[in-house]
Image (cartoon, rainbow, N blue to C red; front, top):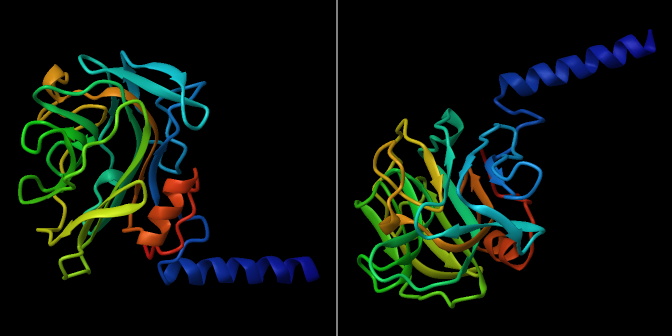
Length: 247
């Protein structure tokens, strides 16, 4: 009888949590790609946003292994999924290791067509500096910072539609804010592939002018805007804790 009462109580609590929109197992993490063996494109979040690696190869990375991109035809394709249609808030972060300087074009960390993108090296507009955007070109930030070659750097972009100030979008490098601005939201949704290591405005293969040259490790997308302190903590370690997510 006692076990039955406990079970009934737990069932009631679970039901109340569901009615209130709270889930005990819900994670704000929309996707996390370790880019490690045994499946380099596997997503370790609850959403199963596994990617297909095109050309890129596994090499020693910052956290175990990383993917090496040749700047010509290497990238990761991630199929469209509702969990990646984050319209009101998002954080995109990852580690990059540039091995060559671009001359023309851009080297992308992550892009989902024009909805959101992070560029590790923008030579089309900003002389090889880090930039990012949502609803490109409506909301675009430039850091003014050129990343060093042969050195790991942590990049992060946050967006929060509830923030009506000029800090709605913030771009970080190595845990330090480098640019912020107003944003034209909500983020557009689309049915395009998400790409790691390149950009294309269609379902076609990426072109060399939009491919990343170097190593990429630990790419994550959150369904919320992480705080500056959380971004700084992630830049210091491989932490995946996110206490400020309200979704």
